[in-house]
Length: 308
Image 1 (tube, one colour):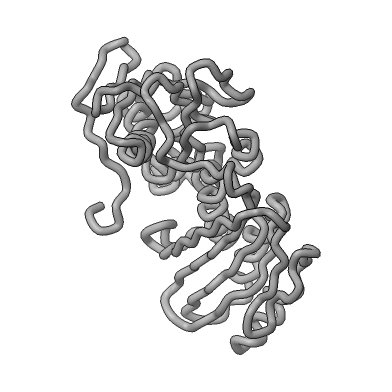
Image 2: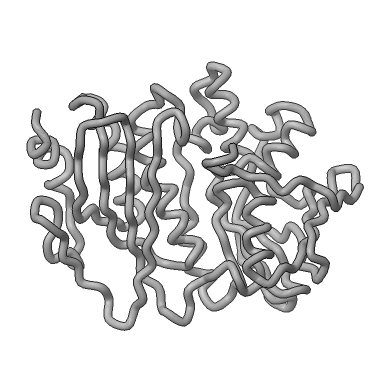
């Protein structure tokens, strides 16, 4: 099967929203944005062996490649609408493409996303996805609005994906933890409720403390107190590793794609979310562990492509 056969079979005949005036198969897509809305755009590239394990099931690869991009839109409070996909494939493997499309389009359908075009080339396995969403221009969430006294909140548990990846690498290929890494759920619906409510937001891709530091730096070099005991937990996560391993995964693990956000002190925490600390004027992060001990010299490390 040649390049055009791949496009015709796997990517052209996908359901299109009314906003898609011209989709896959032409030189460019033509879309119709909603009047009065701003466009939020994001793009990520996933490489085999770096963003997902070698030999990872194609369905998981397809899901993750879209999920990590949709999470960026969620961090902006944007509703996802359209996606572009560029695939580099060492060869045409129809079974792999079937699985990839199953994962990609299952999530796309759930999130209301239309694939409107892209590209396929021969080369090492690499997936690039560009997504576009809509958000009222004055209500887009940003990293830069946190202020001392704000509540620090999270949309769900963290550490699960790191534990799931560790399980996968140990030969455990099923279970809720592996699922958390393989098929993360971008918090797109929750983010819409944060429009006009959150003073800042970011998605947790590189690790809780690392992404918190991005908010603090963008907001003027302020600080935060974080209570580890307040972080949401699941029974599966509690059965994994020991206390030190779990805390390490929660603070530094990444790949959970929950949202970390701040609220004014008088604003109630939205249903389903949890307050885990507070923004402070001190230019550093303090962490209170499960024993109630404060640590203000915690390493702020996260994933970095050029140093990790």
